[in-house]
Image (tube, rainbow, N blue to C red):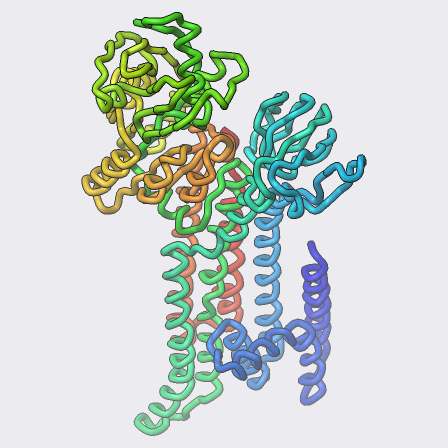
Length: 622
């Protein structure tokens, strides 16, 4: 418990003790009133103050106003014990709610611990600790064992083991050495690392994650919107209803029936009606359920940017996948050279030089296969054609490196391949020079991910790829995906997703899973966009609604299960609270329910709903 919660607990215990003591004493008249006002003010002074501020600011109808009127009314009628008890149990409910929110915040707070306090930068021959915000991209920083990597970068010196659990939810360590990319938020466990930063702190992974989580509550779900609108109209309605209940029946009895008005009885019923009517259980437990769901997901390495996305995710029945880097490792290797008209080493050298400025995984595999230092001065006039390849001038010769579309674009006859893999065609000065076969591997859990999604109720899985038909169909067959679209440009992916969105039933939601820059438009267009966070591009992570921090596609089904559990809890709380409220309101209006039942209808329902909401925090490991 924090200091505020401990203080509230002391107030509750003190007020309860005083209330019980005074209830047992044989007191009457003004002395009894004055003594009972002590526990009443001890436990309720803040509620009275908030109610007064609400009236002053012309925002009258809230739970503080309802509690103040109901309890002061009970005191005015001489029901001192009930007046204090209503306020006491209301504050107990508030304490439960505060504790539940605190628990959820601590869960997300564990994620907030990834924020680095400093970065070690060399200044005047010494390593100095500076604010990560002050470190420019391209600066070499030192990370010692036990320290957290403050900014994304590339290892320039040293090797070590990294603890990535704060980002991914998984305890499996990751080995890094010179040349490896590292992301901020990981803990360096063994060796000393020198890292050349590739971004400023504000653009680093850790900063983006913190921003995503901190702003997640600003995007409300349909359920939260409904509750907000419900409370806006419901609270004034029940206040006016209570006034009518206190005034109209006595007037009818007195003026039309000639009976005693029994003002105290009907005012008591009205006060009971007010206490019962307080919408705390709904107003508190529904947002708390979503907050807990987001917290539970974050502990598993699944970042959800808002409760609206959690609700949409729960309705997902169709999942569309990108292939490279999403379902495959994105680690391409040259596995063969065929139909070459020049020496293999010479062909590979031309291809590597032409692709030397590209960041595409295939380009990297060509450079890795060449294995020698590339002289950028030998390359000029580089032209990268999206979805086709690269054209560049190497040693004065025009070299075209890409897929068959590039060859067709240039009008160069090429050889077909019967090999399974990505075929890179190479042409030099307009003449076909050969083809390089590059293969990718499925991610370890990719096949399990498709099976888990089917088990979770996903009825349609589709794969999109810019790769050739033979490769795309082979990968889809291995994964167990029946529907695959190949040889796509970025614009083609958007068009296909648009087509799928138009075909699906209205209540079915479509999720797209991707990782590359070219996936960003599709991620934004889908009902729910899911990005691979560890290896995914910044553009993809920005465009996505859900981010998987360890790039494991098996986490997609985990995210679905978390979202559906959260929505089930929201619906349970909504139905339970509304049913109990209206049932008790009817009993209160008929005079069957007293203030003690009113306390259960208000505080009891709220406590039960809050305890139910906390369940969204607990997520079983895969």
